[in-house]
Amino acid sequence: MYKIDFNKPCRVHFIGIGGISMSAFAEYLHNLGFTVSGSDSHKSKISEHLRDLGIEVFYGQRKGNITPDIEAVVYTAAISSDNEEFIAVNEMGIPSLNRAELIGQLMLNFKDSIAISGTHGKTTVTSMLSLIFIEGNLDPTIAVGGMLNAIGGNMRMGDTDHFIAEACEYKNSFLEFNPHKGVILNIDEDHMDFFKDLNDIRNSFHLFAKRIPKDGQLYINGEISDYEEITKDLECEVLTYGISDPNYNKNNLVYDIAAKNIRSYNMSGHSFDLYYKGEYVDCIQLNVIGIHNISNSLPAIGLGLQAQIPIEKIKSSMMNFKGAERRFEYKGTIGGVKIVDDYAHHPTEVTATLTSAKSYTDNTLWCIFQPHTYSRTKRHLKDFAKALSHADKIVLADIYASREKDPGDISSMDLVRELAALQKEAYYFPSFDEIEAFLLENCINGDLLITMGAGDIVIVGESLLGL
Image (cartoon, rainbow, N blue to C red; front, top):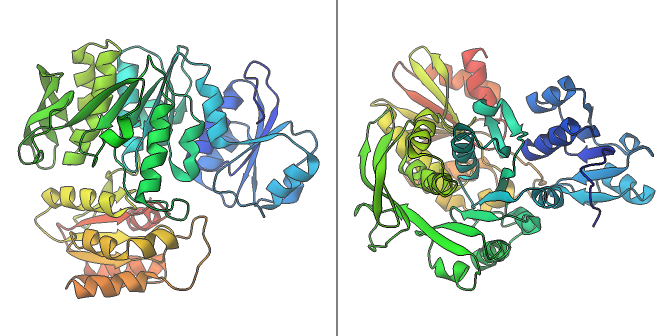
């Protein structure tokens, strides 16, 4: 594996530079004095931001983008072996490494590197922890999988030994990481174009946890089924977290970090009593909705306490946290219709978002859903229908292919049929223009409209608002 010397800037090219994580590390190397270029399939706000910084970005991944003066190449896990640039890199013998290897090497430069893993919630928890460390004056380096207003983007360069990063399980990327502390938020069946089954996924999370050294810590959600299988032979300290209220803790589990006595405030959020290793700490207030966000806050708070950040600063950070971009993000109101955007693209995430959204309106809850990848949609078809049924009315866009090719045996119309079988009102339109026209004609004052998915469905809501 090629190793980057972070003290000797050179010319580095990123294949897939427009990705939320790739762009962050491209910017990081640029700020260290590296000459950075990159390519992506299409223009985006992220790629244009990189251009504004002086980074050369090519649209379209072509052989000609790879020139002899490039000294190293970084590529994403989504890049296929027949990619023109990837082929050119190998033909020219240019050293290369994938994004996960780059992050793993970078972590070795920090004494306190923290990796946030899990099928869902990584960006939210990384954002929460980032605010806590910033408020606590720890000046961390941060790589988050979303745009966080508090750091003005998805990357922050600090000047201390603290590094906070998301750790994605896809293609076992997080097994290249070298964290001192880790978090496992949840383990669900996802990315089945790579993993064999749920046991295969659980084994990967176990291997991730084993990468944490003896003097490190793992924070794990105690609600994960048989979580002891993940932690049984670890050398590091293991701390569990979870919600201890009887309504949510049916098995009477005891957690190291626990939320008790939950109070909900409809549209404004929640408060709860925080307990650490059985002792009451303080009352925490969150200004984001959803029981899942209470759970998300617990490992972030635990890591803050372990870093000896005063509880008052932690409380202030949690009160000021408004969510990361595209995580139940309020976009605006038109004609009395509130428009929210959310990144949910797995049945568990869809359920969490829509059940929380119910408290926002007494009128119709619309979900404008763009399924993400053919393989995920096909494997979880009935689960997606059940999750989407929490909305009153559902509008389906075409499946967002991402890294996949259309296999021809699954489409959004399959979801419409499943929803009809559940006696739900569901519609499909092949273009965003048709979706927008339908919504303008059918939404009324007081309705809540959520655009949802990991693709570009956010465009629909922004277009309705004239953004």
